Image (tube, rainbow, N blue to C red; front, side, top):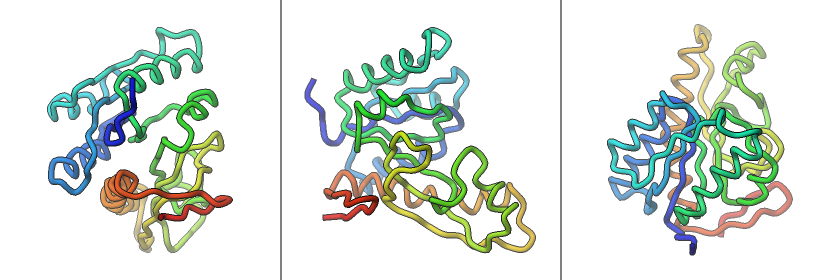
Length: 205
């Protein structure tokens, strides 16, 4: 099936807050795309409810336990994405590491948001790591997904101050406010502008 440039697949595992803000941006006209497919790897993910309530055309729970390994699971997800003719894959709290085959299959078309100013604090607890390290500024990063965990070229970043009395919850909440701004903005930019990657540097055209 021919890829539709405006079609977006969202892969999520949890409450789906970044999915919600993307759907809201599309509904308001701030983002010119269409979420054509939502895939969740958890049957109880609230993202499934959000997608169904928003009238997303295809909303799928694909059970990892039904597949022999990560590669087989990712191949099933990839087939669903291609069947839905999606040009972009947006990871929204997707808590699985993608296989090399999947990343290669959609190279340059998968984006993720991470709650740190990459390359600082990669991995599963960036907020906690930032607090432990004592940084005075934290933030979030939208990046292209490569085989290197949280290591792809950077598309956008936003910073937040780390306050003296911050704990994990308060800092995470402040970072998430910025996530909810820059993620739909970046998706909109990807749908309306082209870019090149020179080394690690993204240049918007």
